[in-house]
Length: 141
Image (cartoon, rainbow, N blue to C red; front, side, top):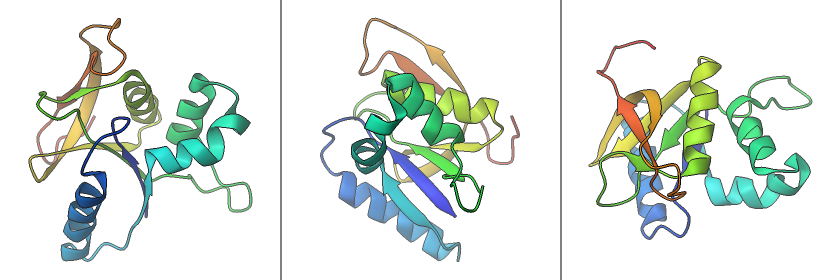
């Protein structure tokens, strides 16, 4: 299972958060590979050609050789000290992944929660202008 970790740009503590999520998957005995958003951005943004191209590639891209999805899960990490607030790129990735019927989750306060929707709260604020709508465990979008 390939998991895209969508972090706010320049967030402190991202390595620790990735390890916390990795530990939860290990406890559940689910093998997973984690990719940090900044690593994917560095490796693939130029080829994608634009922000929209890159967010689409993350949300819906497939591996050339296998034709399998690049990512099975999008794990969003909201801005610290907010209630599920994310920036424009994370919101765009989450929206596109949800439209493609992929699993999107929010990791906050040591819990993984399903994301059901993304709503704009202040589109002029590219860092925290969107909010993840959290569902109940077992709820299907």
